[in-house]
Image (cartoon, rainbow, N blue to C red; front, top):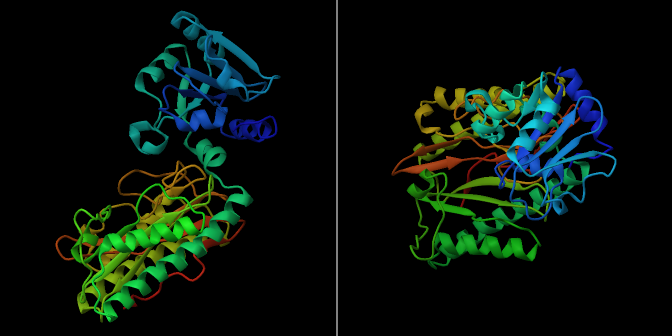
Length: 392
């Protein structure tokens, strides 16, 4: 939430970018970035705007019958109310006419995670005489960065998640050694039970996929369609969890049930080396305090996989933003495939690094760690991440 304490920093950022103000808009939750930054709580069924000027106090533009959700809005800041569309549009005109205005808008939908404002609202704001520019870099800086407490929580949970993944693989190995059937959904439930014991939250999953099932990056096992894990195949476990209201730890681990085939080893090494190429670029740039964009890290990972002949089978971005509110957050992603991610990875942002190769009907391999841009250092979690295939 924007507060009197954070407002000066935000206004300096507006001045540095030559932007006259940030116009935040939400309606029925289409822009959770705006509702979070405005601190709105409770039932809101009408359009809301928040104007944060380069200088002076912010202004809330609220419907006359919905004042209660704004109870966190500082009393010293201004409030304009409307009932009619005429009053709303006139009020906006007073605020933004002739100004350069940032909104959650991405030209050409280049970055969908910040393309939140409907086209009709953009038309309305432009018709009031404003020039609209993207707020993407502001969203990174004032919505996606972690606090020190959030970083500490993530680091703590990452080690627990890694331990739970290793335990899940050990369980599979024990069952197979005893000639006891073990199924994907049983491993999934074991992981969920472990999360519950540790007081961790997960919104769904995890993904436990054996053999050809791992060629589907969003596969989820089901007790209704049990799939037995057998020798001679790869096993992928993708698991994610967090402490309440804290950033997720999101990891993917790989094992071979028995000695891996030459094909499986080849794919694993391509994916691992792609992950490490992205991390190497990030380590170099962050430690040297040089700018780095998410697209560049994606390019580095993708070049390795393409060079090994698996380029067409790396079908998703290298990594996604992780912010304090969502597993797939609104900060910069490691992406130059699905979207044109041009935002810088600035100090305070967290994200996943997870290249993958998916050969339909055969196998799928992904290796995932998380990273955080610190003060001149890249922090990678978990501390002891996977370098070689686990052999069960």
